[in-house]
Amino acid sequence: MLVTLSGLPGSGTSTVARMVAAALGLDHLDGGTVFRAAAAERGLSLADFAALAEADDAIDRALDDRLTERARAGDVLLESRLAGWLATRAELAALRIWIACDEDERARRVAGREGHDALVALEHNRDRERSERARYLGYYGIDLTDLSIYDLVLDSTSAGPDELVEAITGHAAGA
Image 1 (tube, rainbow, N blue to C red):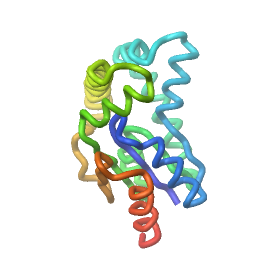
Image 2: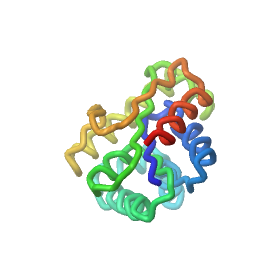
Image 3: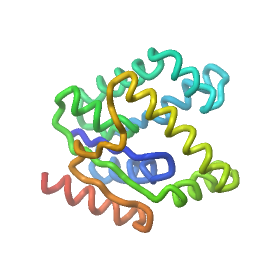
Image 4: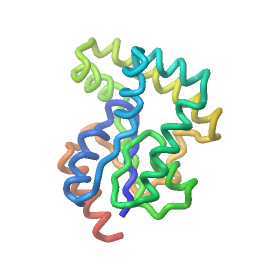
């Protein structure tokens, strides 16, 4: 089984992905963690590494190739902004999920996680989303606002992780 889980920063994808992977007995591969580790290996902040990725498509392409190859092996929950698109373009059978969330709520969550003010987190989120949107449109012609490929779109603004996990595992059981 292949499950893809995507959403914008602070939407709850990491929390939900860990819980769903455990509930379904799947490995969990998180593209964001891989991207952050690559930034740290180069001694760069996430924002600086994203700026470098804007100028060097090899960074995103290497990450995306790695995620796609792992997805082909199956029995994994693949978590990344492009996970659903990667599976779609590789013509892989998958349950594709997008988790949406209000921008202010996402900023509040990111601020709590990273220890900044919510307004600072909101600006960081917006900068990151602009960078990713430009890269994905430029490299792949993918518009992250196009949710047409997803089997399930959930909103985490007021729904807790347990509710989202129940919806996803219920959908997976019926698939």
